[in-house]
Length: 130
Ligand code: THU
Image 1 (cartoon, rainbow, N blue to C red):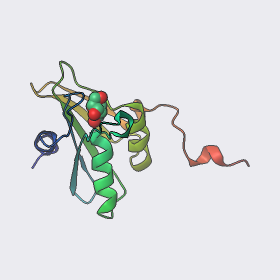
Image 2: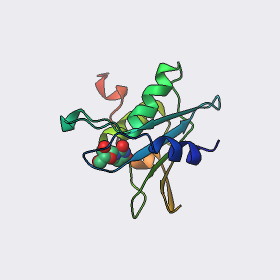
Image 3: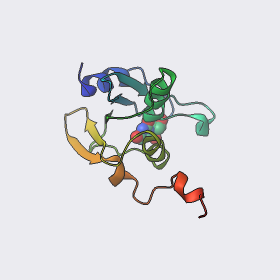
Image 4: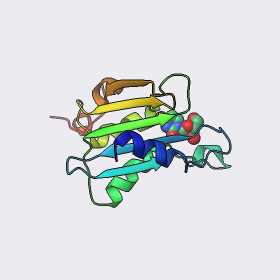
């Protein structure tokens, strides 16, 4: 199954009764395995989690820690970019050149990379004083 089809399928499982904005995310690792996630909202709004966070959690729970490619899809007029927090989460597990494709249900797609989504990212090197 393609990343796009995996993201479209998991999007249908999103729990988004507050925003009514269902999001699906699928990622592939260098080993070729695919992990998926959807947004899971909560009545205590800040406790909700994004689709990307769910897919990353599934990957890590399965014992993998590296992203090769990411696809995010939502029912939006234009492709929806990952939120700030998810950009940092993607950066944790993906190199700057990892492709991130954002898609709409109509099939409009926009491609970017983790590096372009989070320029100037905080990383472990910023905690080291030499
Ligand atoms: N959302 C995601 O899951 N991923 C994104 O990239 C953008 C936003 C979710 C969070 C919330 O459940 C809903 O979309 C509206 O913000």
